[in-house]
Length: 178
Image (cartoon, rainbow, N blue to C red):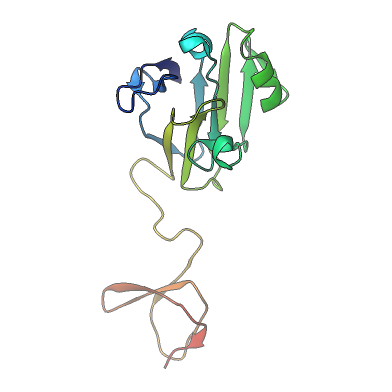
């Protein structure tokens, strides 16, 4: 569980502040595919800092919906007063009048490599979320086909990967090797 608070922006000095995660000023996060994470926003600072509310959301771009991106909602659940609500719109509309607020996300295998957490109402408050397959390994060529060692008279398709003389190559044009 990540404890989310809103506090002073010591980097850019914006009046509306920034999001703090577990007491750290808008850190970059590393999340693992298949795991579930909770962003707990129960702290009063999320609805009172500088007389504004700061609901955290997740997006495909920096500053999310304010920057023309979308709110990432695959495997995302929204909770108000410890009860799951129907959707993001309900979460946002009930945010101010609630005592308990959280977002839960299970990172799917199909998630992009970069997501972003942001404030639904102000820009410049969040940061990157790096999405990985594990904490120790990352798939280098997600979606590519490994064909092992390069061989003559073999048909290769675009994005096939082969090893030749100790190097890994990616096929750029469909062809039969000669």
